[in-house]
Image 1: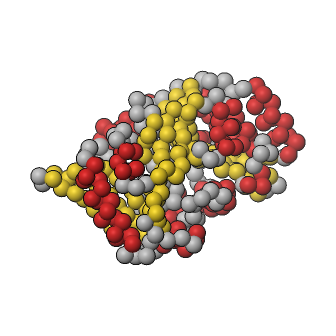
Image 2: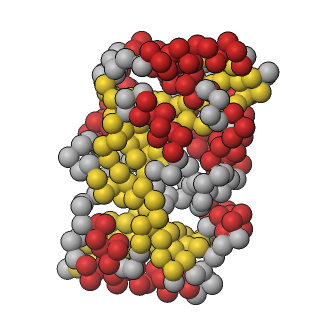
Image 3: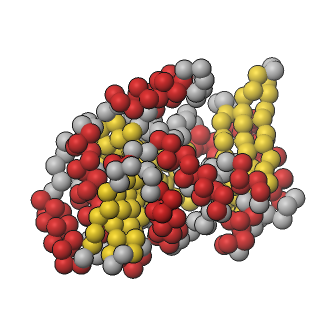
Length: 326
């Protein structure tokens, strides 16, 4: 995460009451984001607060003043430090377990953020399906037909030794595929290397599927074991034996997260997504996962939402992002 500070700056706030920390807030001037989009926008993130509206508003006001002192005229969030970090606060689905790396918070956060003058920007949806849920026959037929007619080739990983070749190509697809959305900016090379290292540390190569045409990578899908239960148990501490709990949980977890599907714009709507979904379903069955959590699908991404709904995904959680003019 520290790579972002090579090009940007942040201010971190805490509020104390009776010598107890009752709120946290980070405000970031992401110069790479602003330079790419031609904006003067601040991020806010790491928002955590007791149920006290006045406390929340006071620290937001401090963040507004810091941002304005740097010539920033807009604020968005909650966002992480990297462009690939999951975004928003939970506003729907509090009764369900939190997926790995996704925020879980108190229900009053939405009211408090709006109370500081923010408006809804967009929601990112999470969906659920049973691991044994059959893929619709129509989708299987479409995937088989398109794969043959269009000459799409699926790449299966058996190990991560060839990652140095494939990872830069995956980043190229991701940047092009997500570049159509507002508030997206390409990460720096250092950020890409850092994110890739984190993903490789948890990834099972059998849960990564790539698709290419005529030797060009055009799409990918990425899934991973959800080891949230172990992370909660060790409270984020890897030492002295936290790492062992993670390894054991990876072997016994019945949950898989799908958090990364991208297809080059030129090939969207041509069936490449259907092929990727059918391929990942085969691996889900091979592993014996009982639950599938599809996370962080932008509600404005109508193509992905439609594809997921065709597969039987039921949307059951929402994370909301906000904006405010300063």
